[in-house]
Structure formats: C-alpha cells, structure tokens
Amino acid sequence: MQSISRRVTFAGPAVRRCAERGTRRRNASTEAHDAHGHSEPVNESLGKGFYITLAAVPATFAAVKFFRDAEDGETPVFTRLLERFDRYQQKFEDRNTVHTRMIEQAAFDRNLFHNSEKRTQTFNLRYPETFNTGSPYNVVAGQGGGNIDHMVEYYRNESMENEEMKLKKLEAKLRLQKEREEK
Image 1 (tube, rainbow, N blue to C red):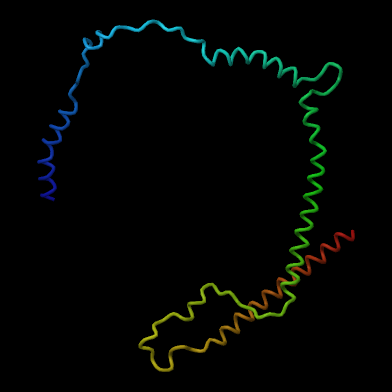
Image 2 (cartoon, rainbow, N blue to C red):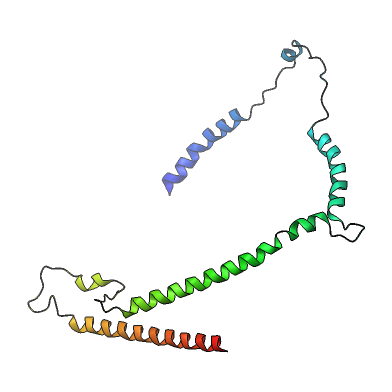
C-alpha cells in the first residue's frame, strides 16, 4: 500500500506540468491573412434542391391523375396495371400445391424404402468413446476391458422399440389421411 501511495505522490506534479503545457492558448495572428487579398464574387447556381422542388409540382399532379378514379367509371391506370398480374397468382398457387404433393410423396417413398431394407443397423450413441476411456496402465487383472455385450443389446432393443413406435405412428397417420381423402 505504501509503494502505491508513494508513486501517486511523485506522479502528481508531473501530471500537473503536462496539463499546464497542454492548455496553453495559441492565438492565430490576423496580420498574415490580410496580405492575401480577397477573391472576386462568384455567381452561384440555384442548386439541385431548387430543381427537384420545381419538378415535384408537376409530378404530384401527374401522380394524382394516375391514381385517381376516372370520370367515366373506369378503374385507375395503376389498378389496371396491377390487375394484369392477378392471373399469375392462381398459376403460382397451383404450382406450389403440386410441388408440395410431390415432396410429401417423395418423403413417404424414401421412408418406405429406408425402413423396408434389412441391413446392418448402427446405433448412434451420444458419445461412444466413453466405453474406451480410462488408463491402459496399472489395470488390476480381471478389471479392465469388460464385456459390454449386454449394453449393446440394451441399446439395440431400445432402438428397435423406437423404430416400431415410429412405424406405428406413420401407419396411423396414413390411415387418417386416407380416411380424409375418402370423405
């Protein structure tokens, strides 16, 4: 604590001197600037803002005429332009519906083929390396490298139960879908 207070005591005057040097005012003399003389006056243009404002007045009248209802009962020009694109809306909707049906059918087919094959199954564990952890040195005889077949069988059975549940849910969903289509 004493060394810190000593440093603060020594640093105080130095900081004060630096602050005094930095705050000196330097005034620019006006004599050096008087010798140059003044330039001639320049004609300045009205600027972009003036011309934009000037163009906005007739543009406003044109926009009002373009968007308002016609006197003979016709719809405005802008509305007629937008109505041209209404026919595409139904076309896009039909295309999206067909695309959705195709994707659903592809997902169903993939699930069907994926579950129908009898192949060697692998079971994903969160961290399978946990079975291989531990020091290979200083292992008491008969205590290391145990048989984990019962654990593998447990996870295999758990995975098979999960697959059966998924299959049952899928069959129930398909039955509901067929019932809705028949109605």
